[in-house]
Amino acid sequence: MSATARSGAETGLVSCETCGLLSRPAHPAHPGHCPRCGGGIEWRRRDSVQRTWALLIGAAICYIPANILPVLRTNTVVSSDADTIMSGAIFLYMSGSWPLAVIVLVASVMIPLGKLVALAYLLITVQRGSVASNRDRARLYRLIEIIGRWSMLDVFVDTFTVALIQLQPLMSVEPGPGVVFFMAVVVLTMLAVKSFDPRLIWDAGRNWQDGHA
Amino acid sequence: MSLETVACPACDLLQHVPPLAPGAKARCPRCGEPLASRPVDPLDRPLALTVAAAIVFIIANTQPLMGLEAVGRQASTTILGGAYEMWAQGRELTAMVVAFCVVIAPASYIAFMLTVLLAVRRPPAPHWVAELLRWADFMKPWSMSEVMMLGILVALVKIAELATVTPGIGMYAVGLLVILLPAIMVNFDPGEVWRRVEWADGAACAVLER
Image (cartoon, rainbow over all chains, first blue to last red; front, side):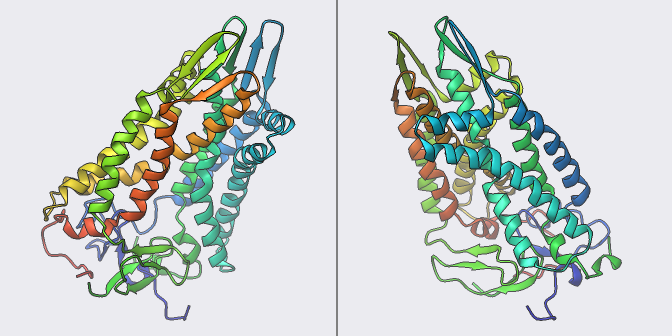
């Protein structure tokens, strides 16, 4: 883009996150509400970096028990087996359905981990005021925004396995403590992605904040 | 439709969105974010799809998803039955999140969209339409029918090792829902609703658009 490209904020215009209307707030320090849809408007999502870090750290902490603790426990008359997320994927692979094993591995291991790393990278580069590879970082944000929800997959697999296999006393499956932590990782990272403001990527090196806010 | 000045929601770049041909999409030239789209029939078609989704959703939630037969015993489950079993097994928090993602969020999305699309048929639409559309938007990322469907399929493959599993009517309904929900989103243009909605602040304000 040319050097004359201007952002809304540099021009004193706020864009409503709900309806997209551009407006010039009467009191720049408190933009207030969108005149069209009535939703709250802000120059940037409030305390974006701090909130995203807080949610991200929470998710990273939950990620450890989510992978160590069992998500399913299978009880039969003679034995009791505990399955973690990893061993569940390995079971699928061993039983010959390797495409499903790959899907589970991608959705439950790679996507959550990738999301944690990617968000930390976006936060650190924004905090350092980086102006390099903005477009790629914007694309990365868009990617984690879209694929993040798929990591809920394992929670659903566990839910419906548990719901169906209740053949007491012959065999029953119960959810393990890992499933709660895993669900927490997915929810917290989704909230973290929502609280991160991608416009911050493009704000580096521009001092529009001096005028208002 | 004249040139509309917008700021990209993902990078805040000010730009004019040119008039779009039916079926065309506009992306931000700087960051690549989708800015606007012009579906061929932005209100009626999504309304038809939403009505269909509402019917299919009811079937998906009331009919059994799948049945299981092992060692002479039978079991079957519904969507809510899955969340309920999670609750009964002492994972209340997970049960609530599952119920939210597969029942409450898609149901609210369908209900809100249905109301919005009916209300905007006679402009100017009352102001509460804006509130409902905001809620519909909020529900979108949490509505996980397609993720659930894949989850059920993986569970079926796992269980098939141990027992005979037969998909039920609910499962086919979920399959349809997975097609209908994104079809609503693709064919719907929120801009069309915003153009028809009564402004929250009737007073003249320094607004660039229009």
